[in-house]
Length: 355
Image (cartoon, rainbow, N blue to C red; front, side, top):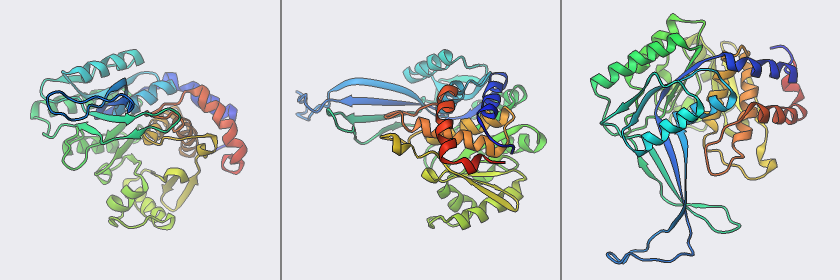
């Protein structure tokens, strides 16, 4: 890259409103219940204690948080490709998407699939960090029907034609049937192979190895387990570099491995580069939930705006350091916040920004 400075950052961020990105994935609601432990009550029917909820908060989660981050960054046309249910959470997500100005041409309402919801009860005491109780998850357990899958793949192809880049936010897990099916993964691989000059970035917990010809973003554990065939092994930078370079050679695309508080590792055949993240814990409390979504959104948006991979990774690390300071929710970073934090980043890591 050329030397990364504030002028170059501004040029990349200024290009974002003219770029479009499609996101296919599971669009979820993160719902928080604030419980006041000082209010004591019991059920007349069962005698069990009742948790008294004094505040309810809801935020876009999963793939919806990727969309939220793209909107906060200032990307132009943003196309969600996927489903919401005909339920209260689906209504809520649609309202959020409309408020963000998203293009909803490829968002379908399903009469049979409930919108995924992660409900997080929090015991809230004055002057203390909230105490999270057991979470309540609603996530589809049945696979997509043929009609829904046909519509999803058709929408994916159409959105890909319109957009400057595609993000795959695959949050399916064992026992949870996400919308990124085997057929969808094959379609993404086909599109990435046929259109080498268009960004395709895939984030997948279980199947990151299936996105051939795409730029992939596993975390360290996923790289070890899925790409390296070393399930449960302790990740080392040497082994991760080896895995990343081998995968980049196979995919003919770079691999970005996230390292948590240690930043990201950029791998290409025969070379690798580690990009640090700004240590936000120096600024106060942090909440890392959703940091991966911010990283994915920022990487894709900056690459679509013309940034080199290392430039995009630096901006993604700056953006993630902003969002993890947004406590109790999946956060998002604006260009103004990124600009302010970039000045601090440049002071701390001047060598990273050199040519």
